[in-house]
Length: 116
Picture 1: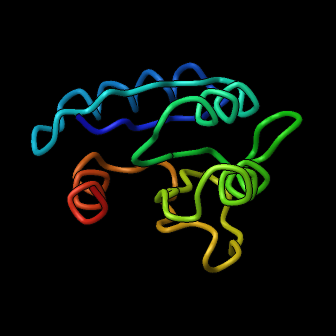
Picture 2: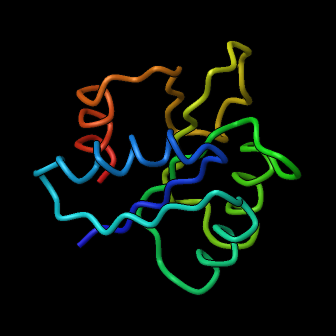
């Protein structure tokens, strides 16, 4: 079983992502969803994650800071996807994949197939 960690400050987006990943059939997934990036980071310090999908704009701690924290304190090898409505360019090498909202589930599935 693969563990996917979802981080977004929007409950609506998290609910959508949970439903998307429940319908993914290639691998059995354990999906852990967090509204707060600090809580997600604390979870990942105690539990293994196979993939992380994070929003960019969140209060107190953005997706870049979360990805940097993961790379520094947990592992540089865990794939991290950014799921954002922001149109700016993001640092290369920090995110393995950048999805612009709204994202179709087939795009997520292709990335899961590539990274899990």
